[in-house]
Image 1 (cartoon, rainbow, N blue to C red):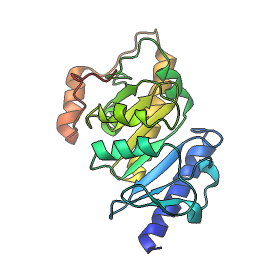
Image 2 (image 1 turned 45 degrees about the vertical axis):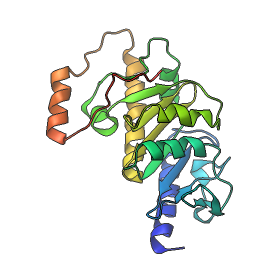
Image 3 (image 1 turned 135 degrees about the vertical axis):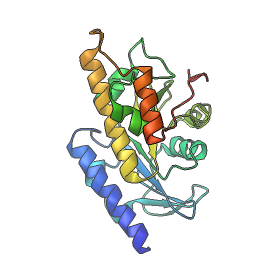
Length: 223
């Protein structure tokens, strides 16, 4: 095990425990992966609580997804693989079963091209926007085709009746973006039917120009 490999394992455990202890993914739900320089991954094991991960037991996969060491990986490997494939710059993916995001995924009015409105600048800055993916059985390889259908436009997707999946250019970035999505979902539920004042298109454009953001193209069909 290289020193960088060991550091990443420790970071996965540290962030996993933080997410678990704050109630963002209960029981043995949720999973985390990090893509390595050789194209392989580190990924959390199946049926493992993010709050009690063992660095030595985190699965090490090669670039083709074959297990090289550690415990059997999460059954959500097809989901992670498809998002890495479509977001080639992504270095880490976080998938949670966070309460407010899951609740939003069940609401009838949700636009699959833009699950949440731009309620705060940090939602825009960290996620860019979130697409809704239809329900699939957990671990169903068909979810990979749904992710590929988004053509890499979104770094954050919400699986209907299941939870968010967020890619980032670092593990920290993916965690922070996932947390921002959950907090925005919470705000949305608190303000639902109260006609809240979201950011205007001009305000969003200002964020895009100032921070050099690339937002999803909503013209595609994400349903």
